Amino acid sequence: MRSVKRPWEPLDRASSLLFPFPGRNAVSPRAHNARWSQKRSARANNEARANPSKAERRGPIPAGHSPDCIPRRPPSANRLLESASMRRPWRIVAIALFMLALLLGGFMGDRVLALTDEARDWLRLYTELVDVVHDRYGGEVTYADLVQSSISGMLRTLDPHTSFLAPRAYDTMRERQQSSFYGLGILVGMRHGQLTVINPLEGTPASRLGIRAGDVIAGIEGETTETMSLDEAVRLLKGPKGTQVNITIVRRGLDIPLELAITRDEIPQNTVRYTFMITPETGYLTISDFNRATGNEVRDALADLESQGMTSLIIDLRGNGGGLLDQAIEVAQQFLPEGAKIVETRGRTGDSFQEFRAGNGDEELGVPVVVLVGEGTASAAEILAGAIQDHDVGLIVGTPTWGKGL
Image 1 (cartoon, helix red, strand yellow):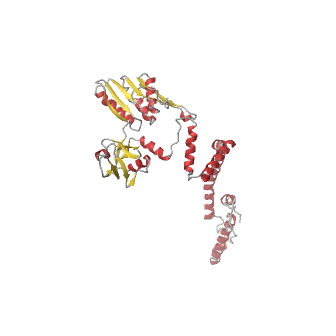
Image 2: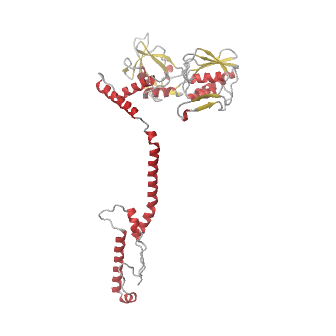
Image 3: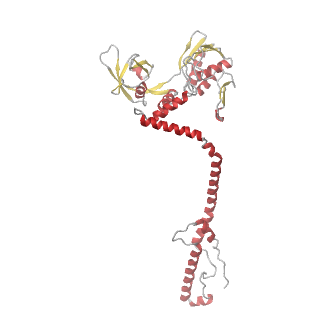
C-alpha cells in the first residue's frame, strides 16, 4: 500500500502561533492526529473481525490510516486551521498599531512633556511651599484656597485683563450671560450690614407681592441674613422655577416683620433697558451688557424706533462692561455694510487668529448714529463702538473708555 502524506502537517507550524506557551495538559496537533488515527484504525480492525469476508478483500489496515486508505482531517484540526487563519491578521494589525504608537510617542513625547529641568525645579519649589503653608500656618487653610490665591497673585503680574474665576464666580458669570434666570426678581445689596432690596423688577413675583425698595430681608427660610454674605443670600433666593422660598421682611414704619412665601419664576435679563424717542426724529436706546439675547433685543428695539419715525439714533454704552463677543458682533452687523471688518483676534496659537466681518442678512441701518461711552465702557462694548467709528457709521462721544477691547 502506498503511503499518503498527511495534509494536516502545517498545523505543527500553526501551533507555535496559537499556543506559544502550552500548559501542562496541552496536546500538540501532531500528537492529537496520531491518537485520532490509532483510534480509527482500531475501530476498523474490530469491524474486520466481525466481518471476515470484507477484511480479506481489503487486507489489514495500517495504523494511522483510515479504512479506505484516504486519511481524513479530524474536526479539531479543521478548527485549528480556521482559528490560525482568522487570528493571524489580527495579530499583524495589533503589532502594526503598537509600532505606530511607539513612533508617535517618539516624535511627540518631547511636546507632551516639554518641561525643562529648571521648570521642574520651580514647580517642585511651589508644591513644597504650598505644603509648608498648609501644615504650619497659624489658622486652618485648605489646599484649594492656597492654590486659587496663588493663581490670582500670579495673573496680577501679567495684565489687568487676564483673570482667574473660582467655580462659584464662574457660574455667576455664566448666569449673567444667559437671557433669563429663575428667582424673585429683585436687585439686592448690603446697606449698613443689612440685606436690602434696591429695586424690584416690574412684572416679577417680588413686585406682584408688593416688595418695595428699601425693604430689609432679615431672614431666608428661617435663617438670619446678618451673618450671610451677599452671594450666599442671592444663592438662597434663586432656585428652580415653581418652587417657593420663605423670607422675612423688615419694613420701615411696621413694628412686626412680614413673613412672605414667594414662588420663583423666570426672570428675564434684558440688556436693552431703555428705548424711546427723545425727539420726533431721534431715537435712544441703552445697552447695559451683552448676553445671549442682546442681538435680538437690539433688533426689536430698532424696528420699534423706526416704526415711530426715527431718522437718527443715540446708542448709550456708558457703564457697559462687555459680555459675549458673538453678541457684540451680531449688534455691530446691524449698523455696518456687508463685508465690513468688525474685529479680529490674535494670539500665540494658530487658532487664535480669527477675523469677523458683517454679513448675516441684516440690512444696514442707514441713519446717523452717535455712541455715548465712558470710563466704564469696556470689552465687547468697545468693540461695537470701535467698529462703528472705524467705518464712519457714527460718532463717538464721551470720555476715554476702559481700554480692554481695543
